[in-house]
Image (cartoon, rainbow, N blue to C red; front, top):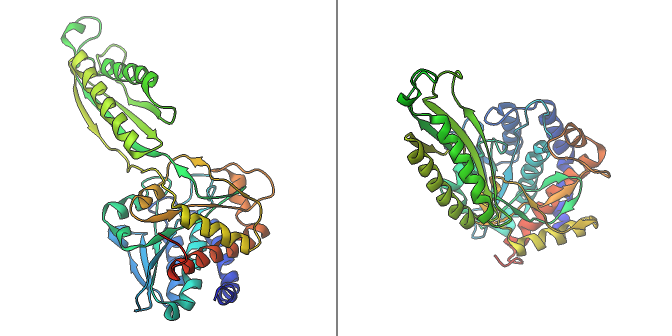
Length: 374
């Protein structure tokens, strides 16, 4: 049956290249990907997928379903299509969206015989407020037996790990006063921020090596001779697992409260962006994908690596998930670079669009045929 999928893949290969190049040529920032999402939606509609536009109220999100109406597993493919400021598609999301939509279409050609359901999700804004976080919080991925996507890069890598991330904003409020004539009448909110940074720096001695804590002061006062009555800092806190991160956050929040007590300022804490859970790769699903890549002629495969943070992690806490990498270059590439963006429209990248879509479709078929233990 995989030979049938290969034939179907070859039929749409030119479409995959055209769509990927179109999205490359029309880079759109997160939650503004109107052209990109519509291009993918039209492609899926042409192949009899039922489309839910503006999914969960997100203008550029979608849910595309092909249902055999027969018993079987539900396979999810994740499309990304947001670009980076100035750089464009330096993370290769033009390819990701094309490969995932292509995989869903290829697999749909045998679904009426095999049974089950395919859902292709359009997930905007991976680079910023990743829609997968919202989807996960709303229970969307609970409907899946497996979720998959493949990321372009300079090496082919098995699905690995990513770090959990939580963005936290600290706002301290005090009282203005003349810094020279009556400083004793003021409450210095900037001092509270400074104590916050000192406390977090002291905490670095007592965390595991996987923990990262980095922040900036976004507001610290308006003039040197006025006691600042409001000051704000934004931090990213990361760790190898969500559980470790939760423990760190509790300690950080206590430090922040202590800084308020030390200075007399009041404190407000808020989540200023969406958080990312750590990626938990499903090893059986990952092994099946790697075997399918080998069957498609990809031999230079490397072990998994730990990456930064991504909303794919939130998916992996809901269902069996993989996020492997597929090489599109014969020389080193740096992610989030112009060179990476340009690599996505080369002949090799066009060839790998079909390879990636087929590997995803093959792996979906393995799940439907119960060849992968989930």
